[in-house]
Length: 202
Image (cartoon, rainbow, N blue to C red; front, side):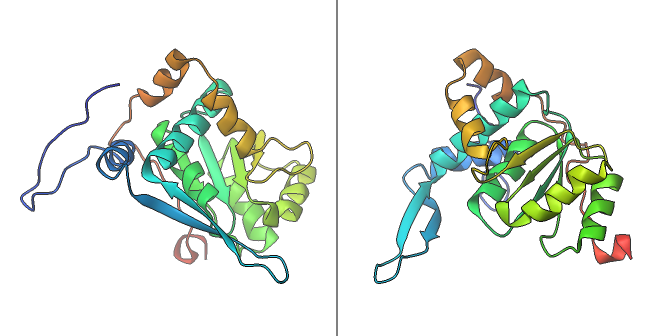
């Protein structure tokens, strides 16, 4: 694994050339710290349960998802992400950026017409979505509009390709395949986020 740059700013903070290096640096520097706490709803009469995700696991989930996406030739492509606020959104977002792709984050509150329009105009080749968006996604599939060819659900939803399975696939990939993704050159001058706002879409 390549050595991360140790450049320092005048504020005595570590400088990273890109977000992938920042995630890797955080996993090293804060390896014993919790990055995310996920709360699971409690059943009636029971206490809620929590999952604690440390920084190294966050990085591994990103790299494993990215490795599986690379095998499907989604690295360097435009990938849209839409769901409620959740851990899987973060993993998907950084996996696309770590593979030198362009991520298209979409607002979960969009009405279908605007969602469809954003998918068409972004020319996204893949869509990663939460099961709360399944009805809109199914409508998009049936419409035949846009450039989306691959749909990845954040949840295990029927026969749909899902993130959990892809992360497990990446985890079990040969080390040389994983290293290929981790060492994918990142172009610091490339546009990597395509963000639709009310000001750009009227």
